[in-house]
Length: 76
Image (cartoon, rainbow, N blue to C red; front, side, top):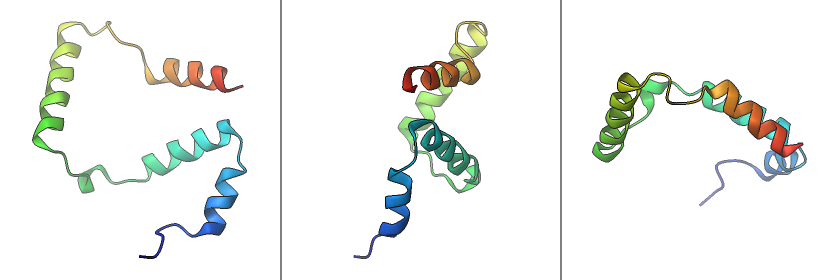
């Protein structure tokens, strides 16, 4: 079976800094049409539970911006 991603691209990605890789991951993830993602019954139950938690305690979590900043700081 042929690789889905050619080796040249893999090599170029492996040379990126951690910060650049995170940025690439973010851009790739944002490029995916969420309507094309299949969600299993178990995943749906997990997501529904997290939504219930959010509605019960809207201030209980942390924003993605906060988490992303922490991750970028750790990787420096």
